[in-house]
Length: 133
Image (cartoon, rainbow, N blue to C red):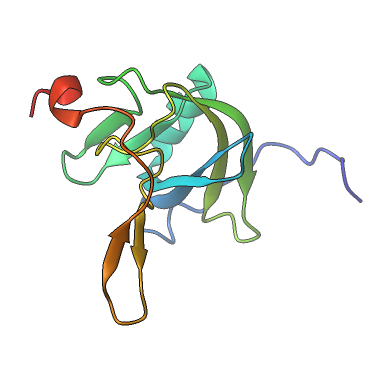
């Protein structure tokens, strides 16, 4: 029975030791932009603001995607998988680039069967100018 609301979702943060994978996909093109992780606090912030918030495993803090670069992800739709332990954010990617390297997608390295890599797609911005690194 599709279209029947069954109440608020309960994501299974326990299974992932407090973190769940979150896939960001361009709402218009369907291109996979990135994979990051969310915790309960970043999940709530995403729901509250309508923009993607993730958990930085490196910095151990909530990370507002595009907070520094301006390349925010406006949430259009959210899907949860059948086990409630992965989410898919269908987003409008502001500025066209999701990757901190300046590429449209974090998945810009085409790996051949022999393990060699070809970078696909052009950089849309210079990370040094945006992040000062």
